[in-house]
Image 1: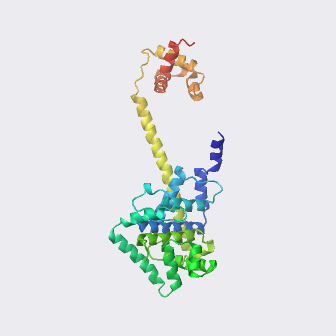
Image 2: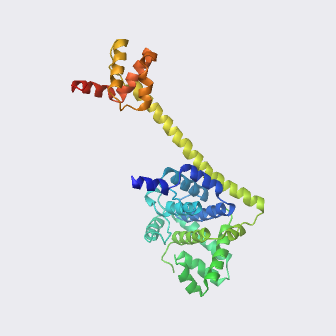
Length: 191
Length: 149
């Protein structure tokens, strides 16, 4: 009885979800789509055709259906980001082969699974993915620090480790990440 | 030379940038958009529409499923052939007996059947069929056999 009461208080209702969507600000909506689009790009690298819109829609469906409920007290934007991450990394069994993604902090085993699936992917896709990586690198030709950052992120290194490698402060690292993010974000067709 | 495939490296890069995006400030994220205020507003409206569309789809899907369930339930009720007394007087008596013996019957149902005089023969038959589908007629027969008052 007590647990039922707690559950009722703990999770938002469907109407509250609808109101929370209304209340999302322009920057919040922009942030949600950008992050989801980048995660969709990660999935596409494994051969799954999806986009940021699809992921956000799926996050909403899971929230409403109760498979990923929104806990009161958690900002709704945070909940949606975390649900999109969950879709990409927590349930490989529910997804198409290759839709396993390495959000390394959450799932240390994910990179290995992703590696296996990626290895079984077709050669054409691998070539296309390699071309994408090369294209990103070409944008920063001559900028050794940025190229090193791209390689380090691709090697699944984390912030502090990369800062040490690049010999930069946290602020400088953040600034490099913002530059890289904007460059990748503005690539045609990735929005 | 990396041991990781290009797919894994690209995915890791994109996920790292997504993580970074999640923590970007409002000013930073709006600075990413090389457009004017109207375009930003239109982009935000488009994302909101996607989220609202998901709510709408979810709700209409639920309504559709509920309607399907209702049709199935009505079908089951119609298919159920109750063994009712042949005469209308006996049917009325049976309904009175069932309702009278069941104070625990749902309130709405009890109210519905309280004034038997106002019920048509068809209403009585329909009510008995509903009770039979709920298994309440069999229970009633069982109670009689057990010698309950």
